[in-house]
Length: 334
Image 1 (tube, rainbow, N blue to C red):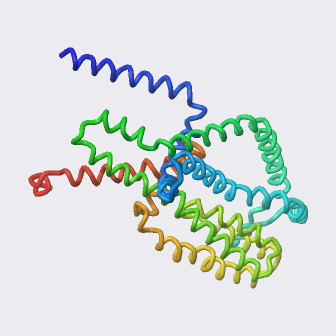
Image 2: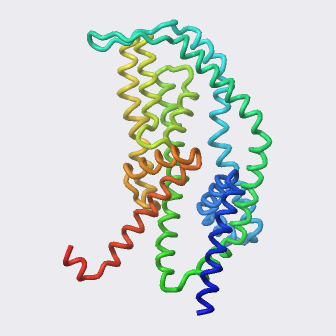
Image 3: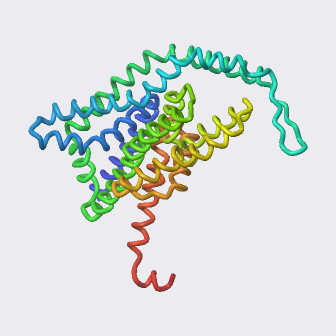
């Protein structure tokens, strides 16, 4: 009886401590979450380096460097394109008429372009000021991210050992199933999506350059980044170019870029790259992935891009576990 009371007291203190830590560390929880998920994905790389004769410290350090290089490879092209092409963007915006009229059948809808551009200008200026203010905080979070990824990769077995000691042995198979589902889901989000996005970028660059668009590289970068957005994807870039061609009076060019772009940019990278890597993923349906992505982003912000699909994937695995644990009698009555 005394032992059970002690367990209840420790459990209550644990819950209270978790709530207090969540409240105090709320500003860095997203960074901690990202670090854990990235370390999850990079663990096989770290183990591969250890098998090649490197120490765990060196392997963890090199894997952490890979994480930073991968993040830079995703963010740097977009920032570079926006900076290099800023003058062309300004010239294009200045050439737009003050008002555009959208006609659908007998209905006409005037669009005040000047007001939209003025609102966008205010948003960009506000974002620039906010970003400049947050730079010291972002730098500190980047350092925290690196330390956490390195620490987890250096001693990956420590958290697992503590969790398995806390939970009775008869439930360890459940933890193993959830672990496999989490690993495959994170692989699908980070590795598969990144590979597909890179393939989309290369294909879009080739297609837009072949069709004669001067900003082919910039458009390809945006198309590759939009590959991370489920359902919508790079097709938005193709359709936006088609609309711009229609506004400019080039209907033939709009039809050409729509047909060629949707097939080669919007469909082909998914059809070629994704099936080759699908065996490493959790096999989550695209509809459920979209639900997790959208709900996560709307509820948690940027961290929801990862957290939403992860929660949906774990929910699916729990449903599978509950279904498998049903007794034969229950299955016959259902």
